[in-house]
Every structure is written in structure tokens, then in C-alpha cells.
Image (cartoon, rainbow, N blue to C red; front, side, top):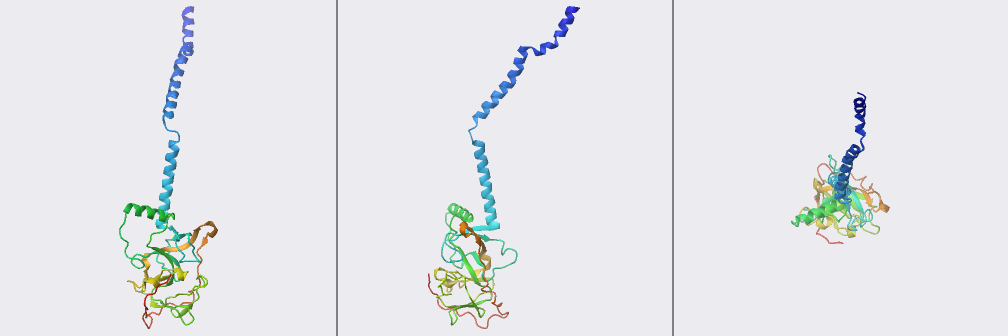
Length: 279
């Protein structure tokens, strides 16, 4: 009886048998070893590269969406808007400025698609190359398309714009416009003109008149140099680069005294002289 009792009491102690402990620990060790081996099979840095690519793609997609609907970077490629904008400036074009019923006003600096007014219809080219170029331009990394222009609005629908009066000044609806934004020494125009802007059209000019190809150069073209309002991409509101020129695009009070065009139209129609050539 005593022998059986002792044997029964030793039964539970068999759970701590060293041989069994070795067996139970071997399983976790094997599992850990297999996990370490599987982890070592993955290339070093692969997860971080995938994460970086995904984040980069998401950022580019976000910027393209913002550029398409809200504010688009635009690289200034020429001297036509000096001193307001300089070669190499990257401006932000406010695409919401005219989206909710408002229209361009005299004095606004706008970016517009000149297809059909400043340039002929663009021929079809390489679609892939065009897509890449447009994407880079949308991010401000490349020059804009050859059909995109930046100019200042001088006349809107119904306005009569004349240059120059006997003192060599520009007038809109009979009122002299003092254009302090012009490059010092530039005259308002070397090409005389007298035009009435049709409804839903704009007469636009560069601030550096002697270096700007603008509405004056297309007086004899279809449309007479007028830009359709619905071709306006947006208003240039900010200079984003370089940092030394980081600021808003300065407004102007030059047109504050200009009255609205007469309801019945101007008593005389446009007297368009021959086309001229200037820098």
C-alpha cells in the first residue's frame, strides 16, 4: 500500500521530467528558427522601398489633383511681363478665381489658352510625350505648353481701348490709364490701335510692351487678338519661387477710374489699323 501510494504521488512530478521539458522547448525553438529564416529570405529594405514608392505616388497624384482643380504652378519663360513677373518665376495660378460666376477684370494678370486666338489649332503630336510634358508643366517642373500665355487684362467686353492719345497714353472708355506697372522707359504701345472688345472677350497686353507678343500682334487675325473668357485658365495670384521673390502678384489701381462701357455701345465702332510688328 505504501509503495503504491508513493508511486501515485510521484506521478505528477513526471510533468517536470527533463526529457519532456526538452521536447516542449524544442517546438518553440523550431518555430522561431523557421520565422527567422523566412524573414531573412526577404530582400533588405524591400518593404521601405515599397512604402516610399506608394507615398511618392500618392503625393504626385494629390499635387496633380490640386493643380487641375485649385492652383496650378506656371513657369514664366519670357520677359513679356517684366517687371511684375521675371524669367524663371514660378507663379501659382488661382483656378477658382473665375469658377463661381466671377469674370476677369481690368488689371488682372491671367493665364489663358491661346489656341484659336493667339495660335492656330495645335496639331496632334506624340500622345505619350505630350502627356509627360503636360504633367511636368502642371507641377511647375517644365515650361508651359506653347499655347499657354500670361498677360494683363486691359479691356473687357464692351470696352473701347485706344492707343495712343496725343500725349502717348492708353485710354479705356475715354479715360486715361496711368500704367505704373510698365517697364520704365517703355511706351504703352508702338503699334497704334482703336478697338472695341466684343462681349465675352478680353484684350490683353504684357507689362513689358516692347518685349510682349499680345493682342496687338493679332489685330488682323481671326478674332482680332481678343481672348475668349472661357479660355482663361485662372488668375496669377502668387509668386512661389524663387524664395527671394515669394509674394503675391501685386494688384493695380490703374483702372479704378475707368467707367463701364455705355449700355448702347460706343458711338463709333473699332477703327482697326493695319497690323504692326514689334518685339
